[in-house]
Image (cartoon, rainbow, N blue to C red; front, top):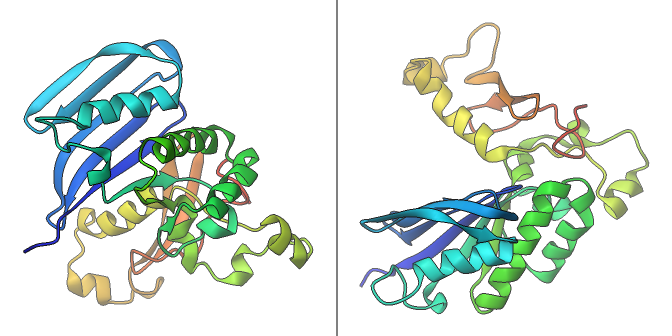
Length: 251
């Protein structure tokens, strides 16, 4: 018998909450949706749950209410799951967890990791605050369900030490987590994976080393609140980027 697991992926934004509910290992999407303009008197939502598509507006004063509304829509008779305990895990695409969020992969949201998220809230005030509020709600509603997060700097875990060390006393990195991190890892990883296809590179082109660049190495800008640049090596490794201590400051 195949071991199936149901995993909810939550993505709290500065004023929104998006989610996808998967059944693994076949990666079937059981539900997806978004709730916008959180902390306003009228928050629009749009969910696709199985074959049903529902949308509307309701007041959502905080992320806790948003999480409750999403779970109420997913749990119950005739819905994807009958109880929160059926969730194998809840995953988050988080932003800043200090040194504990540097990857290379996802981490369980232990008290220690959550403490680091609170500690680095000043470096990512809009995002970390939303994540911490949503995480706390999940911990209360489904205390036995494992929570994990893939932090944005995890993609940049391949950057070598001489490129992420700052010109400050070494003890500051160990004590305060002061180093260059790199952010928006999910976007950069997708670009590194898709760009060769978009540019029409075949396998031979990907393996051949041009005179001016090593194999499959390129730089790509991404536009958020301002431009940022990330280098790619073999499409999935990040040898260089221009982010510093937080997601809004360049080197």
